[in-house]
Length: 386
Ligand code: GDP
Ligand code: MN
Image (cartoon, rainbow, N blue to C red):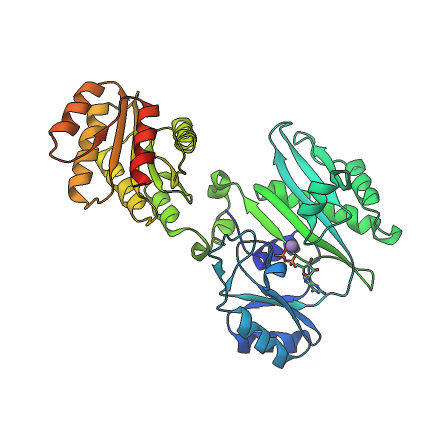
């Protein structure tokens, strides 16, 4: 789960990480009030679940309450396009108005889970800011990595080493070390999957502050963090994905034109690969799970068909736990209830697959029955491309 910058800053602040003074508002008048309270130059920052806002025009500085109002008016309601939003962009509903910082230097610090070493990795760079991806690509030696063994936690020497290698000024070493510890505590105690400060700013008056904040959480741990789960902003999520999760379907929307309905995550991945191999792109990842009941199948169909890009549906089910004849019955019932206008290619393999073929053939509906996965993908790609 993702949260907004302002929420991540609140959380960081609770863990003792210094953040600029600020307030989040959804109306330009209130932005002006916030600026008046802060009483100096402010930054007006679009709150969306995507980075790259600076480059995309979602962050503006303002010198007065009046200017804050007009800058907020420009940002609230805009569709902000950044390299992380995709071309359709995201509607901005709130802005964070905060004390503008006089920046001396921008650093990067972040933590993620490293699956290869089964540890938490602290990533840091002296060259933080909006070009961090370029730094990582072109001068990887400027990116420090410190692996933290979760069994013993972050050790003092590790935090100090990173603080020194970030070339923090002497008088900020203690503060920097403390900040890294606090970020680590937040990461572990909140079950985060990512905790990032970019930029971590050194101001001209010698303060160290999180000027931006990003925290993602492990969805599987949210059950034990009611307060964090409450920060979820459904406006920022794909409506079809929300619908799918209510129905216990694992669904991720993608940009292609072949809708996929598959049981098992591995088979779903393989299906997506083979669609690409045959020259199209999958419209989604969808795992209907072991129990592909007719209700499940119907829900899955509804979600797939609500995507206007879907030009063909490929159903690929392996009857291991579930019987193919039951899936076929579910598909037929769902197809009869819904008004399906796109061609459906079906590949069923495993227990009772012959019986399933008969059910599909006798249904009076037109399904394209495929012999194997290769054949299914080829057919689906052909019909999708018209
Ligand atoms: P992002 O583009 O979505 O990552 O948003 P950030 O909050 O990281 O802001 C992008 C850039 O805007 C930062 O790297 C800074 O250079 C600049 N910026 C952000 N906040 C302030 C501020 O308070 N004062 C000044 N001068 N610049 C800021
Ligand atoms: Mn940033």
